[in-house]
Image 1 (tube, rainbow, N blue to C red):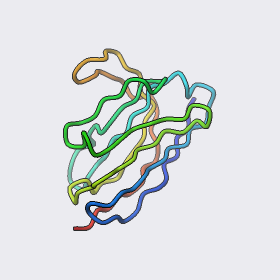
Image 2: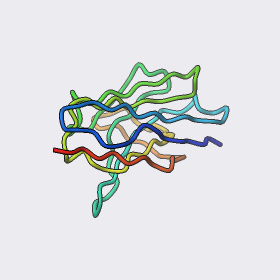
Image 3: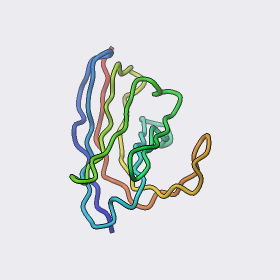
Image 4: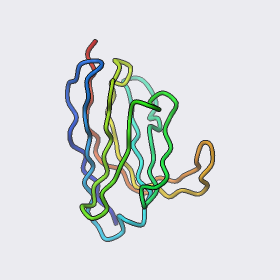
Length: 125
């Protein structure tokens, strides 16, 4: 069992920066790849980024590549999403998830086992 709690969301100006955190509890945290997803109003939830359990392998959606960075600190059971140069279209509720990678491809195939409750990110123009 893994419990996930996101924090760090809020209002940010376009071109600024924001760092989201996801604190995990449960002994299985380090066994999971961790992902960030987002859902904008009226849209389906979409993939943002994923990190392997070690943090050595990452994958990003094209829409955030080069602007967002996923990282994790297994000693602190925490995964991060650094958002640089956000755009108004990045406005969404951001969720972290404990993920099982079934194939590290382009894109990777995965299953999501646990979700956090989400944190709102609003990017003003």
